[in-house]
Length: 200
Image (tube, rainbow, N blue to C red; front, side, top):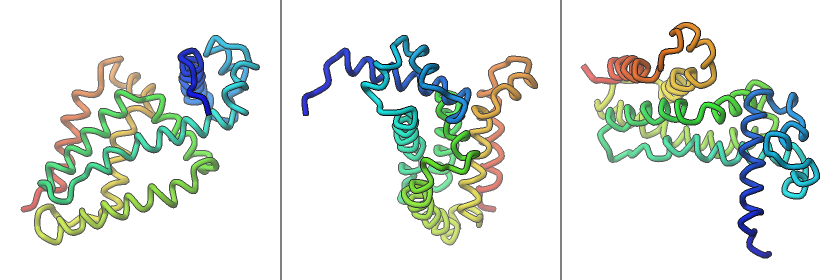
């Protein structure tokens, strides 16, 4: 297979960027190929040259997103300082909500629809990784390096408290009057998890 040209790479990237914008706003069902083409400044036939369907664009976005989303959890180092590793994970997840809000909303929309396009990845790669890191967290607790905590629910709590700032951005901005929520969020979330996890 020939390497794609610079124009082909640019057009493919433009389609994915447009898809991210439209899907994160309207969800899979509410998005049309015409909307993506307009957002990408390309014709609909041109979009279909690169992707066979709206679903193909959506799946390409979700696959890339899931890999990015799991990366901070992959770096949790069993040989590192337990509290530092966990707080670094919290910080990175909050930074991802700040830096990738559309991606977070795209993922949330897919989950709210029952994850029809990525259910296999959730029960496969994601579950395996969370189970692996849950065992690390349990070992840290057993060694007295952190307080005893249900490791799966700890991960769920980190996801919920960090991704909230992207998925419910409109609500956060309304309550805060448009102020940047992230400095305060980092201080607050860090305090909560340090209190929860620091051994007596």
